[in-house]
Image (cartoon, rainbow over the protein chains, first blue to last red):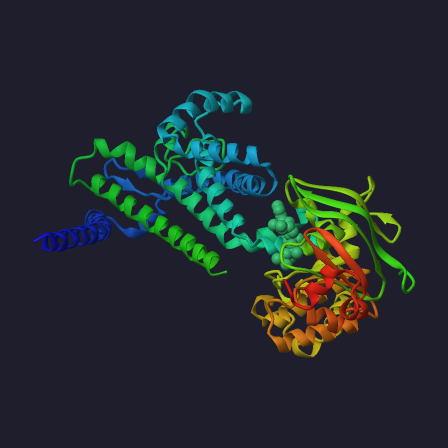
Length: 293
Length: 255
Ligand SMILES: Nc1ncnc2c1ncn2[C@@H]1O[C@H](COP(=O)(O)OP(=O)(O)OP(=O)(O)O)[C@@H](O)[C@H]1O
Ligand SMILES: [Mg+2]
């Protein structure tokens, strides 16, 4: 009797684990098919080329215009700027933490990076709105501080933890005996870092950067709060921009279910999905490369 | 380069501590140039530690403390104005596990030259050929210089690591159990290579393998629990050791 109960229990647990695993996949498929259905039907009403390459996002005018090029450019400017700030800083911080910092400081910095990752994005956005935005306004003497630059800086903050912690893992994975070999040839700490450690850890660092950038592209709250949300093709970092994500978040509440506008937001979602999928795919490839070494 | 039979490494009352643990005790040693000096002794007696004192690679271990003196020629290598990077350039080291860099064969050999600022391609090409020839790898690898060094056999990797040390033209090459991961055939080949290299360099080799010490070395030091128990000509150490401990060890009574 007991043995039978045990068997049933094993069976139940096994099935539960199986179902949880399958559920993850099913959710992805469900979300994806929802995106395809809602967004896909949009392209029955609106031309794909005009959607991607159109310069004007006037969803409420008559006739409406659903050109998302300004939004794509907005996201691109944010990603580019955040990347320019976060990648060198993040990689250098990772090098510092794993190769230079003394033990106590190392633990402190690691904890700091983890804390940074734990701050909700609304909070990051809020702090940025009340500190960074006015600062940028006065520093550059421009009419508003709600600019792409503000978004880049806030998002660089948010991408940093990912970049730092994954790069650091990759740097730590570089075998100790490479360093010893270089040291024995008279290499300085700095030479070892850029001649041995960086190249050997490069796949992992690239993966870290991709995952960091993935976070930047998907980020919504903080970016919506500090970038001004003007749907125009930006010509510099000191102008307001609007990203793909912010558009969905800002407009979803005011659309009529089933309208073209409503569907267009799902189409934007599909575009985002494709972009993040590609980025994660690249990151994954490099993470595997790193493991194989 | 120092004249033959001059002492290239001399230690005076050398003590080394890892934190509270004393790993070397009052070592007095004089290594002669252009000879192969073997350091033997049971596991944990401090052979590697001693070797790693000579190129100051122990510096990176946390909590290491050294007293006494170590001279390279007449330079006090732990003196106040010793230049660690230049010491390591003059005193090369080959490790137990072959550790070529994840770079091409060519870049492995020129690594030391590049970090010391030599970049002239024709000079580097010449040194690559010369260094690989000196470790008898040139014929095997001359058409594969741009391939990754990680794909070589273990023996080739170890030879490459020796070539990498040789390329910066050191006076001394330190080898820490360089054959312990190799099969007997490869071991014999590396031993032949060492004998060949001693015409140009002073070689200090740490080994577990007494036959190896007997086969290749000119001088031998026997260590036990951080002490240098006996040091002398290899022929003398292996035939008529002065210390009872040495005799017990080489006759295999403990180890
Ligand atoms: N980094 C370190 N910190 C503390 N103790 C150490 C350290 N490295 C070595 N030791 C200790 O110092 C002693 C000598 O070590 P060493 O590696 O020099 O021995 P060895 O003769 O080379 O041994 P083996 O033949 O096993 O390689 C050992 O007792 C070892 O445990
Ligand atoms: Mg050892």
